[in-house]
Image 1 (tube, helix red, strand yellow):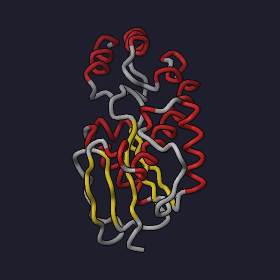
Image 2 (cartoon, rainbow, N blue to C red; image 1 turned 180 degrees about the vertical axis):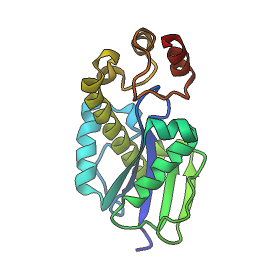
Image 3 (tube, rainbow, N blue to C red; image 1 turned 90 degrees about the vertical axis):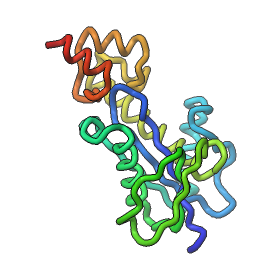
Amino acid sequence: MSDLVAGIDEAGRGPLAGPVVAAAVILPRGRGPRGIADSKTLAGPERRRLAAAIRRGALCYGIGWADPAEIDALDILQATHLAMRRAVLALAVPPRRLLVDGDRLPALGGLGGPIEAVAIVRGDATERAIGAASILAKTARDAYMERADAWYPAYGFAQHKGYPTAAHREALERHGPCPLHRRSFAPVARAAELAR
C-alpha cells in the first residue's frame, strides 16, 4: 500500500465562466496508457481517447469541482485547492502520497490519514500520474462546458469552454453575465456593471 501515489491536476483556472475541475489519479505501479502528457499539448480526440483508457486502467480516480459561486467567494486559488481536496476524497482508495501540479499544496488535513505531498511545477509534463489527472480534469470540464452551451447558447461555451476569447468577451458585453460567469473576474464584473 505504500506505493499508492495520486497525481493531482486541475483545469479551468483561467476561464471567465464555469467551474474549476481537479482530478486525482492513482495508476498501477509502472503502468498506464501510452501517450499520457500534459492535457494542453494533446488534440481533443487524443485527449478523449486517453481519458477513457485512464479511467479503465487506473487503480482509481476522483474528480472534484468548485463552482463559480465558490470561486467568487474563495478566490480562484482557494477554489482550486477545494476542488483538489474533493478529488482526493472521491478516490476509492486513500493515497499515501500526493504529487500535485504547481507550486502550492492544498490543505492536507481530513484527507484520510497521514499523507505526504509534494508540489511539482510543470508536473503534468514530467509525472505520469499528474499527466493522467490533467487529462481527466480537462475532459471532464470540457464536457461540462459543452453541455452548458445548450443551457446558455448565446455565449458559445462549446467553442471556447469559458476562456476569455474575443468571441466570448463580445458575447459577455452584448448579453451580460449568465449564472456560470465568475463575477469576481474583472471582465465579468465590468460586463455586469454595463448591463445594469
